[in-house]
Image 1 (cartoon, rainbow, N blue to C red):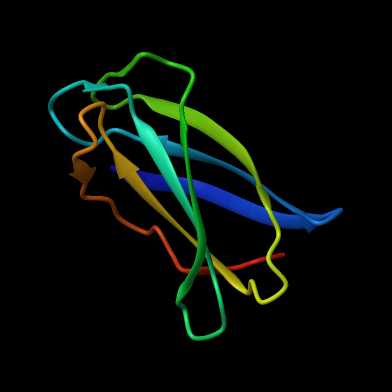
Image 2: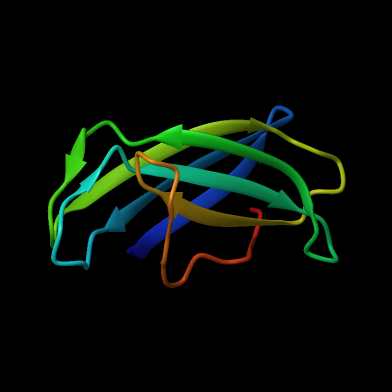
Amino acid sequence: MILVDATAKVEDARVNLDGHVRNVTDKPIRRLTVVYELLDSDRKVLTRQKGSIDDESLDPGDEAPFSAQMHYHARGVFYRLEFEDGSEKELRAEKTGPFPLE
C-alpha cells in the first residue's frame, strides 16, 4: 500500500481526514480498512478510529479515496494512518505519517 495523499483539518471540534491510497501489491485487497490515529506532541495515540473505503475490493494498481471525521482531542498535534484488510490483518504501507494537523 502507498498513501498517495492525505490531509487532516481541525474544524468545529472535529478532525476531517481525506486522502487516497494505492494498491501496489500484485493481489486485490478485499474490504480495505483505514485506521486513523490522532497523536499528541510525543506521538502517543490519543484516539483511534477505523473506517472502510467505498469499494469492496481494490485491484492491483488502483487508487481509492477515503474520508472520515474524528472528534478533536485538545492535545492532538499529529495524525497517522494504518491499513488493514477484511480479516483485520495489518497491511504494510509507505508514507503513513505522523503528519501535522492543519
